[in-house]
Amino acid sequence: MKKEVAARGVDLISLGIGDPDQPTFPHIIQALAAAAARPANHCYPDYEGLLSFRAAAASFVEQRFGVALDPETEVISLIGSKEGIANLAVAFVDPDDIVLVPDPGYPVYGIGTAFNGGTIYRMPLTAENGFLPDLAAIPEEVARRAKLMWIGYPNNPTAAVATSEFFADVVAFATRHGIIVAHDNAYSEIYYDAPPPSLLATPGARALGIEFHSLSKTYNMTGWRVGFAIGNRELIAGLGKVKTNVDSGVFQAVQEAGIAALSGDQAPVAGMRALYRERRDLLLAGLARLGLNAQPSRGTFYVWVRVPSGFTSASFTAKVLQEIGVVITPGSGFGAAGEGYVRFSLTVPQERLREAVARLETLKL
Ligand SMILES: Cc1ncc(COP(=O)(O)O)c(C=O)c1O
Image (cartoon, helix red, strand yellow):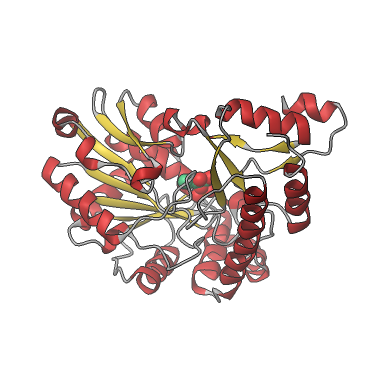
């Protein structure tokens, strides 16, 4: 439909994808340029990552989340967190294992499960529960057979954040049933209130938890493909066993740039948060004038909005695209429980967002 509308000559504004519009910070690019020139970096990297990169990741995590890690056994580099999320299933999901997956959610959790013969059990995220899964609603039989549970906060697509109390409930539930907990923390630095916590700061989490981190959204580095996982050493070792057999790690020059990102000045990240806040508030105000009262996002650069009555996720997305040339994402694309919502992404410059808001206000609902 996008192609069709573009072919009519409409100037499309895409609020559809989660890819930052701002460039990578200059000190990171400079670190890459210097590192790329060093011949030592032209060889195969180790799949687990340079120890210096893992140490920089550990030290970032300790400062930011108060979680102390052994960089040798509790940290592994990733070719973007998506790679690790998909490979975790290769490591731990066997045919007929149940994997608990949030709905709506980042599609890779379920796809990794399906590719490895696992069975998906969807945990609905509803507004009534603050977009946190209701653990008490998971049937005993399902919990008993479950191998792995996926959660991710700040949450894509609902823009919710989790509390330490929720993580404590998850750890208690998983301990009781012998379930691995995988927490996707790719948006940890994109928040609007208090800095969101790490699952691994929860007592008991290190016995069964693994957490995925990404440099993509924090430092505007989606194209660079670098992230890391931290957590229980057996889980890190299992992921490493897969990686050593299927990939050859992250280009070392990119890891050196990653060190510059993680150990350098974090002020530019605070600048990005301020920019996203401005955009979020601009969009929320426009939606409110249209009669759509969305909950302010607590984290991520998305806004999760209930569609007006009489519409489905798909029909509202189609109307917005066809009538005003604005691309948004139907919530149903993230799972059946996303029906009735759409997701707006804040990754366009202010003037484009202002134009999108002006166009939204012309919609007849
Ligand atoms: C929730 C979530 N997790 C993980 C990722 C993957 O990010 P990357 O592979 O760039 O680290 C994304 C990317 O959009 C995401 O939205």
